Length: 320
Image (cartoon, rainbow, N blue to C red; front, side):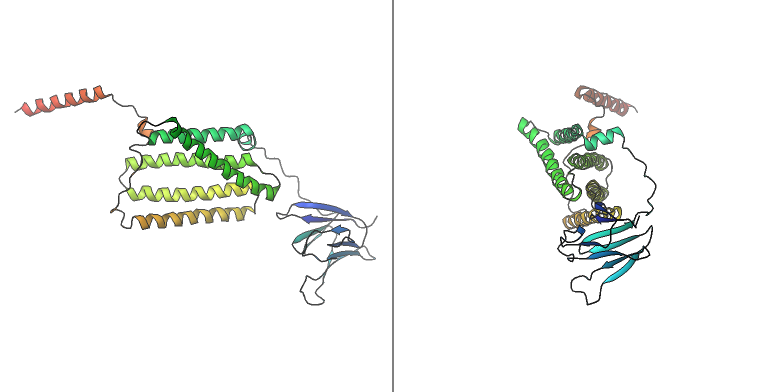
């Protein structure tokens, strides 16, 4: 039996989109239909690669010159046994591997825990995210509202936030469909929804900080820094779900997004309050939600305590 190799066309992320077993030589690859492997790439030559077998069984790979290259720019290389060759046909990547090319050991299957799998992959998890986002928005609206309002005013903020989440996740799902052939809508809803819930929780923590400490600048800069970090985490999560780029590229994009938002919000903050004390910020809440949950005295208990304190002060004043 003669030499056997495999010709593989690679996708954008290095995944194999087409694999052909090659047992007869010469083996031709190119855009023309006379080739053994036809490449649908307008930048590839009509006959771009030819794999030829020598009398001793050795294989030689001859790659045609790219358009615009000088005459005689063809490239030749041998394909060693148990080896490989990586070639570019225009914008298409071709990999030639010998039949005896060693493969790494089988990777272990890392299964997600059941709650994460349900949250990122099942329609009921998506509905749960939507419900949680709507309920949190209603709770925040109730905390911000100190007058009677009609039911429409209560429903509109929750519907608006859920609609924005659906549109945002839908856009990322469309992009994922183009890149990875699977929209993964539920996963994008989970990424955006969980970060939205985390943002609400952090905002409540900042409300406690604003209520407890007098430093206005600290609360403002903490808000700017956290919003930048959340923006970077949001982009990183969506890119990971979409399998866009390598891990390093995704991390770089997330850091860049975080720094960009931090810079923009910092400029806005400095331009609005140049000396930090001339304009005092107005918080939309008199007190944060955790503080409002603390046990309180009734009106009667408050005035009873005031009366007792008044009596004690009067008694102290009468003493010589």
